[in-house]
Image 1 (cartoon, rainbow, N blue to C red):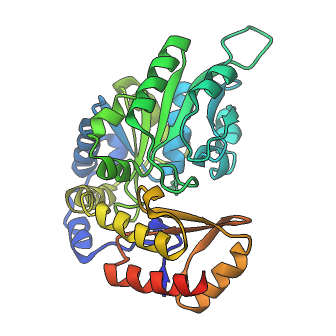
Image 2: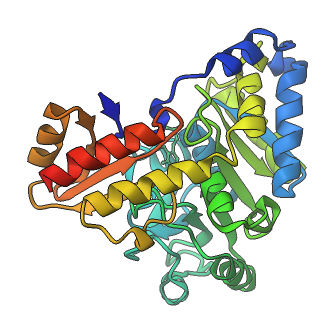
Length: 331
Ligand SMILES: Cc1ncc(COP(=O)(O)O)c(C=O)c1O
């Protein structure tokens, strides 16, 4: 079976397991796990921010990132298919009392005119105040699309002028970085708080980081513990992340090339596939998934007429070629 349902399906490599087994550890709730500290400092540095906090998941990292910017009863603006709006099970409302209004963009980009139109300043007892704008780069449900750097810069300028903050869900920011060659710190400069994941394309079994100012991270540390996310000898997991940063970033270019092979096989213009995710519109999406599985390729539906396939560390060139041949036969 070639499994293209998600890039979260990767299993740690032997070398990653060895790095995990050999990690120096301590109690991270006491701030005494040297491997976690190393990972946090490294990721903060890569993104050009003061500090970072190791988190169990991207969802928790997003929840704490957004709540650091938006008070209960205030709102965040985002794309209607953003992960924070669609796939975090209402966590931002359920835990943080945050509401959302959305724009819709076919490639998941930020629509600056829509932001201008939606933005609500503090109007006392009349309207919900917009405290932050959230963007996702790369954009998962739009098909791994990369948000142009200039657009993100324009958004930061607009948000600053309006008195709002910017959150960037960078679960796959590494893919955007490799696809465009944009330094991570340039992306980092376009947001007040970011979340980045180690457990997607980078192939670590667990882990995300919330990245921002020292004050934001100090407060997020309290909220992480409050929500039951204080972890102890978690350097074992941070070591997987450090290994991934050393060995699994540049190779993302292979995943991107494999995704273009799959796109071509499914009748999608490969030039529209920027990273490791291909979305295919098919009225028979569920049946297509079933037929692909019967032929040895697992893909997933992410909407009634949308099939998604994702390339990753555990999909070799030969796997991608084989999957492309299977999918082309079904298309
Ligand atoms: C864009 C994006 N953000 C956040 C997440 C959440 O990550 P996690 O599954 O670790 O909670 C995902 C998960 O796939 C994602 O695709």
